[in-house]
Length: 217
Image (tube, rainbow, N blue to C red; front, side, top):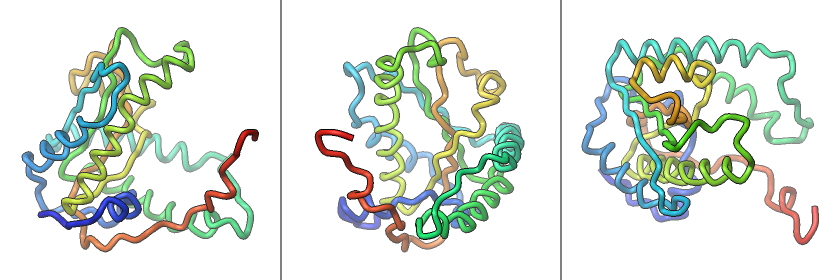
């Protein structure tokens, strides 16, 4: 199924989908592969194409990964230093809804039809010792492709959400899935499912004029 969205529509209505993930409807492998082929048209530094994509459908493996995610989610959301915004900041009004949505995903993550872990393959891991140039080059070679994948999902009536809270247990997940930990860095964890309804709208964002700088900060 194709929704027939134009470029601006797919760019402005591709949301982080949590509560509206359809947990009952299977996701066809060929649809995922079609979205991946689109994603692989994204730019990559020096045309290295050092990306690898792990899709998880095995219920037992999904449960293990979801448990890591859930434990780390609980620690993260119980921190005392949560960010605070002004009364008139749209992020303040949105926070309760976002937290409710994220807690829902934490509870049902193991039920999503497919999990995706995009990876960066290289000579070594992207640990803190890698200079900014190396970090930016590597992340810049996987993040555009992942976003393209999410846009392709949206056009086909599917949704996802960019999460990273399994990464404190990246080594354990690597061992579970056979990912070579010494040379492959995991970039995130994405639930994949059809969405219940396709009528997603623009999000409330801070205006670009508040966030842009011309010739100096």
